[in-house]
Image (cartoon, rainbow, N blue to C red):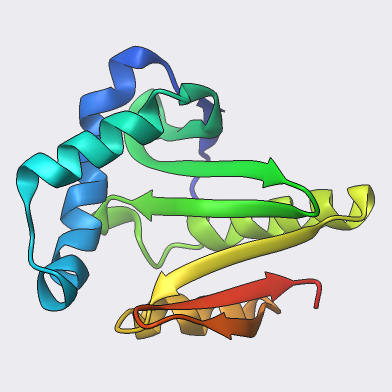
Length: 147
């Protein structure tokens, strides 16, 4: 597997993170609600105001993705995990999620993650990693580990 690092995000990471998030979720959002760029930017800016919940994934100092998670008792919520397309399918996302799972087991926390119902690849990955679907909204599946 390629060697990557995960570091805390800083204000200067805003545009890279937004661009990747928009690229990743746009196809799903367009199908469900339609894409409203102003709304998406405002929503992201509101989330990014809590920059401490964001981490950047890098290889050799190059931005390749990001993670957004926060602890809301009793859950560690993984709100977002996105990689640039050329880094998907290489085990990086799985490795990061497995590391978070191990941390949750040690701290006796439940980890929660969601995905758009149309994102079959993400749901399949999460289930392969031991997540179990526990909820369903009109647009998303919510999965937990451990269950």
